[in-house]
Length: 77
Length: 136
Image 1 (tube, each protein chain N blue to C red):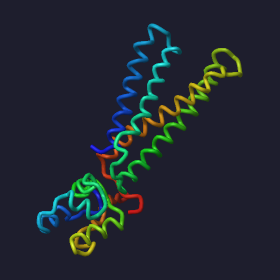
Image 2 (image 1 turned 180 degrees about the vertical axis):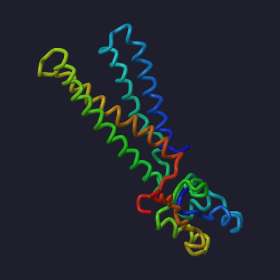
Image 3 (image 1 turned 30 degrees about the horizontal axis):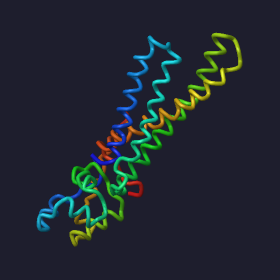
Image 4 (image 1 turned 180 degrees about the horizontal axis):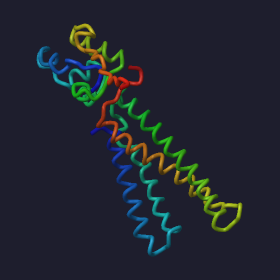
């Protein structure tokens, strides 16, 4: 489970049904990277995260959410 | 499928053809001469012409870097095992300390093939898995 999730797909539809190709061109990446981002298969760099947020006129934390990883703790019996 | 994945598939297909060619030549030429089939792997060099003008972004670079690292690690291991394994085999079976000089060329070729093949497989695997950016 990736630690960072995003709302890119929903924000695309909320912004005039922006296509993946349009978002990719605006942020300087390939459409395949946008697909991977939406599927949770890629964690972007900080600069790309900012570029994506700016494409939606949002803050970074409005687009990306950090999930605190759940650690399995074993107690000595 | 982007250019890097296409090049990786060409690498895997070329290696498959080499292995099949080896087993075809094996009964005809014997185990040593049949390794000439792996010379066909040089065709993989032309894969560099695939998608030269495609855009390459940070995800592609991150995956390429990790795949190259995996290829380098596998290549180094193959080279060392080839060298030490050859020396051990020669010494254990023939009790001689010198290794035939042409085996060095074959071991070097082995290392190169292992590098490119491992890199191709790693690229195909990484494009299907979760990857983090290098400076995430």
